[in-house]
Length: 508
Image (cartoon, rainbow, N blue to C red; front, side):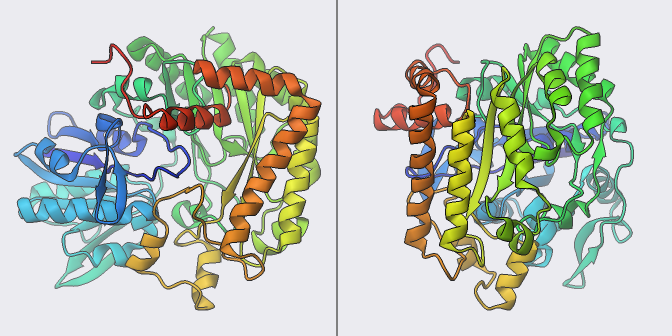
């Protein structure tokens, strides 16, 4: 059976912050568990395969392959098409791909998977062109579904699957998760053109080396922050691969693609600090020459002197701390994040004295947040700048389906889930258009506060750590990426020159 897996093109606006061009690991994992003798699989990465191309569809700006190009790339013999839909703001684009495929090839079976359809299952299945939805961890469910399709039926008992029976949507709850992640084969990156990612050089963090890629060492998160839908997707189950298994994959990446840098995209890589130490020890024991970073953020409490020193010795170049807010009230009452801000300060002080780059993430515009709370975040950012922290990121809160905060906003009548809501989330990360979900902060104010935070942080850096600022300016001008901010500024410089999405000279 021919199976085609699709990662949709990227929502894009000329005034948005930079977005990543990264391998669709979820699709690569799905392909990895399928029997190569029974299933012929190909992956269409709608972003990477035309990352230099931007265009308009309806009121959306998109980047990557056009819908016609995606349809043309689907092999005629394809029986099942799997479409990845990680983000809510990308749902309308994914749904349009499904609609066009069904219109052109009505016999093809369309399966959705990813965070959005896992949470918004009935809303996704309301699209008549979607035949199935795979919930949460999809490897075993997708494989079982393909087996059932091949046998002409029998999906009623498949764990974590949504389907139709007599025109009614039936949802089999997700109850079974892989206990031993080492049993899952390495993702099928051989189905991608890895050179596209090297050429684009747009990770979620920053690419210190030309040949970099993303990895997942763990799955899930044990915490229950109200702004996040991870608890609903993974049911607060945190599992890790063995350090030996992770290093095996790194060695293979070096051998197959010459990879020099790893970006861990895990929700909570350092949940078990001993695992990090064991991972670093395994890298050193096997003398693996690699650098790595925690681009998705870690808990501040997990950063101590011995752990950080060992991480650096094993190749860690950057640590990102997710503080979210400098207001104890917001942390406790709004987002329910059990975090002692002293741990953030201590981690920053410690890391600023080490040969490692450190970043801190904040979120603005949360429900119930007051301007005074935002100033507490800004004051904390200023203090971090004084310590020597390399960068901060102020992002605007966006309600995620399945999160406690979105459920609350729905109950209060402030959000109504539907196409208009999804449209309001697109494009994601716009520099000048943002919505505040606080009754105390207007949309205009949240944008101004965001840039006030950046201004205060970098003015403090300029005064107290001028050489760091000058070093970053040189990196921007020369195309070196050591922190995310440098990549973002470089992107804006190229955008002003009209060269942002040009392929590198000599690229095939």
